[in-house]
Length: 245
Image 1 (tube, one colour):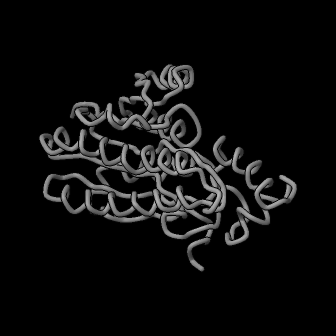
Image 2: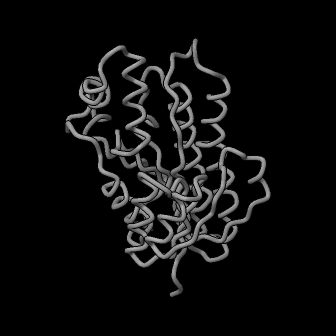
């Protein structure tokens, strides 16, 4: 069997970096996609992989794209926190382009290769916010809910071609994105940063700690594997019991 190729978006840090490293450990050829060339190169060098420096929010540039990857990990994302009546429409559109429109275009670009090979894996890094809502996150929550629907449609269409599509739904993960949210939410809620994790982020989680990126990568590794051939159209929560309530 030839070495399988995994493309990880937002692979220059956080969850994406952890998935890139785990995929290389599992013997895959890794393509690290990130808008930050230094971050992409750092991770690619560490995993003996390749880089794709790309701004995925420029969705017009992705419309004619064709990808030859066996595994696509849609992970790139940003966050903006504000009440709806104060939310910048430009930020709303940015988040939807990056976190919903670009995953659609990347799936669209990757499926012909996967279909031709009769095997493929789509792993969408969603969120507990793909299943539940939180105040002040209208763009993020709606984009993740849309990603859930896209993933299920890809699962139904890909089933006859050996292609699975699933979402991973972590709670708050220890990443640079979350660290920035701590500062933003402290301002929004008017509380010290030290209280944000306990009082805002983990208030609905039974397990009172952040998810580690390597834990998300371990679940992604299973969903990429041959053992997960019957797992498709699902949303795997990794949220310490948040969505159990």
